Image (cartoon, rainbow, N blue to C red):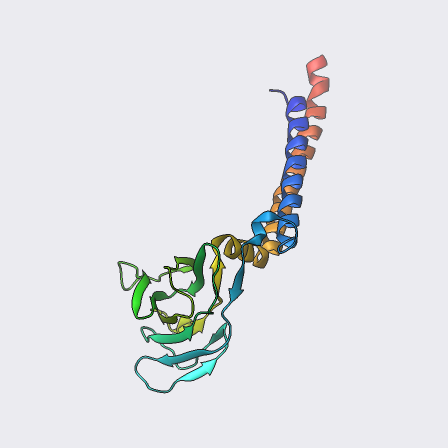
Length: 210
């Protein structure tokens, strides 16, 4: 395929990428309006958390996200709260860990645990989606966090309850600016590629005519 044929294809690809970005941004910005997928609900569990280090009895009531002072590598942070007394469609719990191990109990029953096989390995920062069993409404939630790294011990990130669809839309909305900037950078790269392809194509035409 010649460069004169590639250039129009690149232009079409750029147009397609721009359309896709526009649709994504529209869906994110339209959260809670007319897009059927956003009918699934989710709320942040921000207030009323009882927090304390497992090796002490000094409990603190606080709102999250936050960071509890006094942490160090391996120290276990215990969070406790009650889930709202209401039902959600396809209910799940979403929490984000920052280089932390996590265990989640509902009414004293273990429903989720994330522990790397290598205890000396940094667990990574990630989102966790935890399906909730029937009868979760109003239940007691206990979360245990620990990190092998001093600087991440005591960090408590956003915790939400609702549908996985709403959780994903929330994450996309949080990172929408970075997403758009990344796509813009890719589009600019394609534009520059198209430009250089066109100029180099013009440069070789005279030699073909000789």
